Length: 192
Length: 305
Image 1 (cartoon, rainbow over the protein chains, first blue to last red):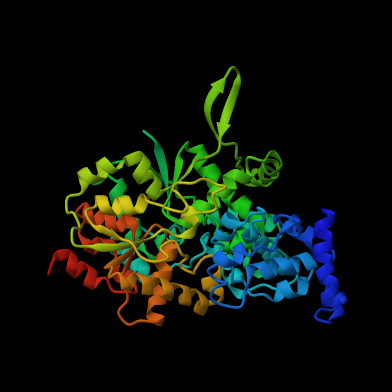
Image 2 (image 1 turned 180 degrees about the horizontal axis):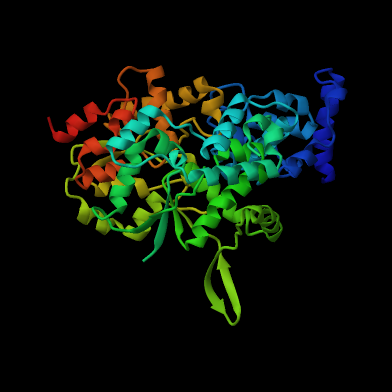
């Protein structure tokens, strides 16, 4: 980190601690490194220009500001970012407009990785992953749609095919090999 | 002639069979007669908003498995969904890194698979490998089929139809992967619409997100719907008859969200369904009855009654 950045970022941090807006014990000094580990870029190089927030479709709607989240990351306020709901639509507009080339969308994805590993797992992740290990696809077959498929003579959806069982076995093996089932807590669904 | 493999993903076969029918019809003998095969072993791409967001290693393994299937058949993947496009494209990019490739292949060897890429040419003794190509349906229509052929096959120009095009974020971005279109001023779907004889209407914030991506729809559905509401308001203002998109997930969002804020709604359809209509398919085969927003008003206008 360049000296100027260090002064800017930690200067503000000290002020926040002094004003008792944040508590020093909440800070995680290695948070930026952790984000890099999960594929995000170095958030310390963020200029806080706010372009990302200006183009973010979600920031327009609710009190979720991309720039603030990147700021939390610079401070090391891990707890705050974990509490943020998963509302990034990964539209990558912020990436196209970032002058520092941080790719905030990828930072959000890295934050999701961290949140999952801290045990914050939204139910839809489990649901989609369960569908994947059961049917080989993230969307469950629907009897009504299967009727329409018959009418259109499209044949069965892949997961109804007998030979598709082999594919499901392969997927179960791959999911187990990375420990993904244990990570998000769907061990009981995965066949060995 | 380029050889393709259909990649329908999860939403199309399980929610919108009409799109599958339209794509098969447009690419098949009654349409442009492309060389497209079915690879039955394809699984979920996997969804970027879920697997790419929660564990990149698992995501890459599952995507690499799909890529090996197309690689063994020496075919280009023809996706019909923006999500599948971005997920598989990103995976081919990750796999150009020898370290990730080695790691992935070690696990894939347990199921008897190996990702190498497709040999394109040889230089002396060395074979030069290229990543498996991942193509979007719109990309294939514009660059491989060409607008002239589309114009030739347009038997029933949809003259009185005003269509609002929605591109969808992952068709345009991130530009670090591959750009099919200008991310700030995309034209391809508009061109297809115009070639089909219809009018593509301009509306405010055309490139805005539908709101569904990245798990927002699954997580906070009200938020996703409020973004869709903004889009639909802009589309209704210019008096469009339908929304045409290249992505089934955006379509699903437009289709499901509209009932939360309006009674009537604007019917949404995939670009392949629109094309098939212009090429003279019977609308009954397009499975519009599986859509939540009724397409009656649109089909009535199409018949000119």
